[in-house]
Length: 386
Image (cartoon, rainbow, N blue to C red; front, top):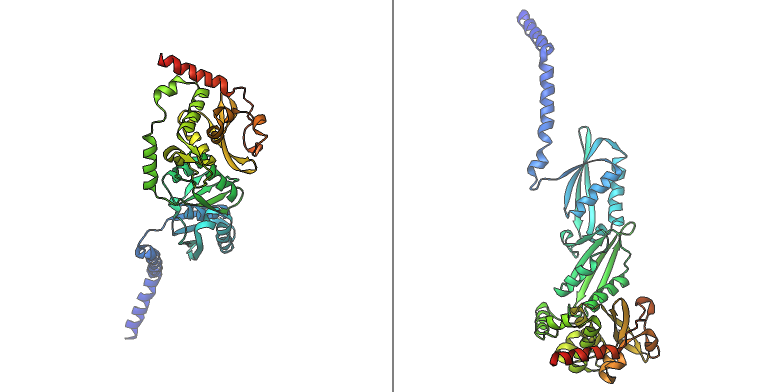
């Protein structure tokens, strides 16, 4: 019996020396490997993993997560990560929230769970977006603000109630952005039935990064606007023959004469649109200036609406460019006192009764006057009728 026990113990000793220890080691490793994939298998959506090696790359990874509109992702810290992972995570989440315009606008909170995976760390990042904001994918993203006018114009034409624009480099303030919207309207008078009310909220990032949350209130719907534009197109004020027949100065005069013959001037500030003048036949100085801008635009003539004063009262008129030189045109005065009194005037003739911000508009010092242009048009009309 003692000998049998001794043989049994000897066998156990031989087995332990010949590899049972290595078998136990392999079993331990396999358990760890089995446990690691478990969260990914249970997840309903595979998580993107981004490897980072320093603080700068970590910050970029978090920013990219937000810019792509994702709610979560995984950051893997390489073995050679340069920095304190815990401190860097806390600092980066705070910086991203406060120093990036997009994140300041739409991110309510960024949280994370840091785990050690054998020899490296992973952080599960969760982003909570504010419910009142526009989805990230609908935000217009620009490097500079060039092209912003076209974006605003398209939005006004479509009666879009809200646009959000992220520009990496912009100097626009809230006031100057509101002025830009007004400029777009004045340069494109039939893009809206009337000037929209605008509110601008700005979110600032580092450097010149700006995010603009712009809301529009129109007081009408897109269907009504489309109906008015269709009615305006049916007027056929210009035809291809006239556009080819006249010089720019003659076109400018013809546009002015059209309004003199078909519109009346009113001090009613509700009649302040191009549609008031062109469809209803009565408009304020603002409405007439907008209508003249629209006619000149159709004829290919550069034309601006001037917002200023006449006899110390709020008043509007136009500046046009003919052969590189600028002139004043006051259609309202042309209606009241004859075309010669308000067509192709220079700064000197205007200054006695008008006031405007001369730094905001070009100098008007052209050499043309009404009489020669009128004579040219009259002569051409007589020749065509004979």
